[in-house]
Image (cartoon, rainbow, N blue to C red; front, side, top):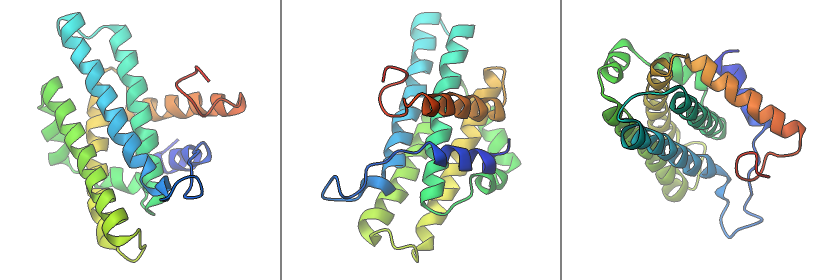
Length: 194
C-alpha cells in the first residue's frame, strides 16, 4: 500500500465533530491539534528511552514509538485530505538533503525537530483557518502545510528506520489497527479502551 492508498483508508476512519457541535467548525483544525499531540507522544517515548532505558532502545520501546508514529501518520493523512494535499506527493517532495539532515540527528534532536515541524504545520493551519477563514482559494496556506508535512514525514521515516522497520510498516500497522477498531465500533475514545 502506498501513501495515497493509506490516505484514502485513513479518511474512511476519520470521525470529526463539526461546527454544529461548537461555535466554530473545528473539523479543519482537528488533525492539526492531533498531529501536535501525537508528535508530543513520540517525544514522551524518547524521553522515557533516556530516563528508563539509559538510552538503550528495547524492543518494547521500539513498538511503543512505532505505534505513536502510526498515529502521527493518521493525522498527517487527514490533514492532507482536509487541505486538498496528496500525502504521497508530500513524501515524494522529500529530497536527499532532508533525508541526510534527519539521519545525522541524535534521538533528542530528531524528536525536537519533528515537533517543531508539526508546530509549523499547526501554525500554517491556524493562519489559514483564522486569518483566511479556510478559503480554498488561499492556496499559499497549503504550500506551508505541505512543506512541513514533508519534513514531519522525513522524521517519521527516520524514526521507523531506527526502530528497524519502514515508513510503510508504520502506516500499514496503523491502518490495520484502525480498520479493526472500525469493525468493532471502537473508533472514538482512548486507545482500545472504548
